[in-house]
Length: 104
Image (tube, rainbow, N blue to C red; front, top):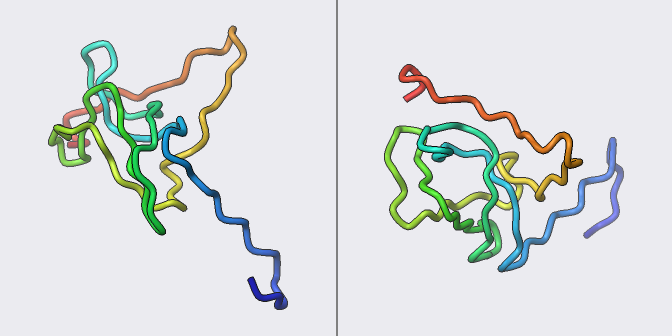
């Protein structure tokens, strides 16, 4: 990386590895109900700009279609992915918002 003048230094790019566990903000099933929230998945493919994340539960596209192979692709700098959050045992609940019919 070239050294130049910046208002603030650029953020270092996050490097993802196959097999790494991450959380993704997506539409999915939780206890038989469709919700939008953070869901844990496993990185199954990485290339220069994109990563593929596979899940063990049904996931949905925002227009309502279920994803049959349970794999979603994201840009590596997407704000919809994050490292797994570790919660203290008494704060284990992650809030999920039920999806209303109007959201589909």
